[in-house]
Image 1 (cartoon, rainbow, N blue to C red):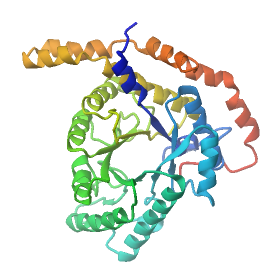
Image 2 (image 1 turned 120 degrees about the vertical axis):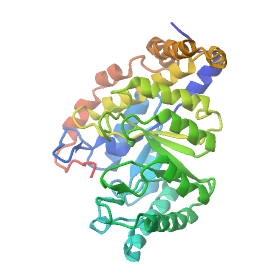
Image 3 (image 1 turned 180 degrees about the horizontal axis):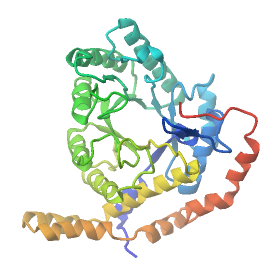
Image 4 (image 1 turned 120 degrees about the horizontal axis):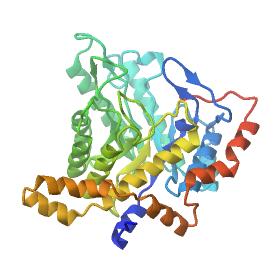
Length: 388
């Protein structure tokens, strides 16, 4: 069994992955949203389910919220409830893609009244952050257009800059604005924030507390995502990840499911660029919708996949790799990476979990816990929550 050095194990121990509250609700496609027995009926029950992931893995100490999906009357009470279950509240995600007013945009809309509505929503999110103790406000915009000539793309960039500046000015302390990008959907001709370069161009003038979120499913086919990771880390602007799996488009499936080698390559650049350093500001989060599989085991599998990819990335012989690169030995350099990727780290991670007092097999442990049977029996008579 391959082993990590003490320094490498310390880096791996820093890996923490936020889980999204919406992953535990009913989800599906535009064709069908499937209901599941035991689905949470409110934010409190979503947090209870999320706490099971951390209890099984020791990797998921925070739960990200989505507003208005997770609105409650008392956020301080919600935070206390989460902490009582061994987790805390994390990123606050805004929502400007479901209100009818946002048909033609939100923060980029030509109508000042619509922009005002969208800005005020984010100011409300910042107030919620104060009550939950959250550091990050994550903004993903559905804004864009479907046809050439439909929208003035340049003007919309100016309006976006103005809107983000007002939102950013309302942040306090260590709070951050995290701007996410997506190359298409729901707009199909142009998105107002389609790529990392646009996101970087918008956050760079705002200062250190405005950064970019990289969603692993938000790129065109064939995009070299690890290069983007390296570049944003180099620029000091990689603020967060949204991990999921992409095969055709924004599939939002279990991270690493379709291309585990890509996840490994991404984590190699994370390690190389200091994304897991002691002073890292990079937030690791899942953004997934479990349409047909059970929600909690799906989240457990997801965080374990990220942990496995990270462990493999730490096993890369960086000295041998650097030597091969200097000598122009293409095959040797590639072999160094492949040796690490092909290492079975599961026994190593199982041993680490045992040392932490956790079950070496988190998915099996959760299955034995009886939690699924309990929530299916108790969560009846209410409206199950969906992702939208």
